[in-house]
Image (tube, rainbow, N blue to C red; front, side, top):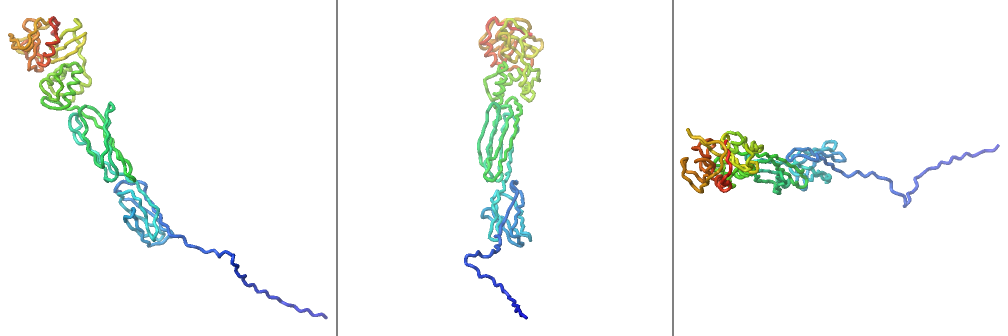
Length: 388
């Protein structure tokens, strides 16, 4: 009988020795702390806003500072999740950064809308002083540019600092625009204001002095009314031209250039002669108390007159002609007449320092002295005179 021997082999495994060229086993490196910061893109100067941010990895109770450049603004403490919040009133656009644990957030800039105040000082009446005052707040938000846009391409433009003061011309009755705009500093929003201005007609009365008086005379002269030399003084001669316009327009003869007067001046009546022949002649309209000098069938000159108004006196009506002219002063049964142009009997068209807006003469036809100076030289002997 054969016998077998059973052997049991036990193999023990031992780790192999590391070789010099094997890589080291991987390790986990914690991420460095990081800060974020966010705020609104735009806000109004001085308005209180929220900056919010987060610290990662999250850690509560960490002290966080808000800086504008290197200037400390506010502080906060992180919550359990690492979040934090600053509530601050904004005066400058930044840039702002949050700083904590030796790290800082990326910079954040908030655009700021400044305040622009504009005021018109003075009545909006032609001929009266009117000025613009403007202010930008804060003063470092930029500079101001003022533009005045008028009709006909006329304009004014000037750059100021944060404050502007401009005197506005008011020599005409007109409407125009005043534009005030901000040329912003970096980080500020451009703002502007447009102020429409409509200048009302002034009330001009005897004795006032205004640039509008000269403008009034220009407009009356363009309509054919005889006016004195251009002046800014509302004197007796200007008053006579005003009376003439009121008479033709059937207005109350007040001698006051008020809103009603200006309205009629914008849309005036254009008087037509009653007679067409001869083509050049003179007409005296007693009802309206005016004289028309007609040339080529059109009224070319209009002047106020004063005809007979005293009891028992009259101014003859009909067709006449100038038969005698006297330079200087001429004594007559109807008084002392200045540069009279006689058209029938002792009746004449003559100058007088007093031509009231109503009939007041002895029978002659009074015109202002500055008017007779022209008529005496322009109206020839034989000139036809109609009185009606």
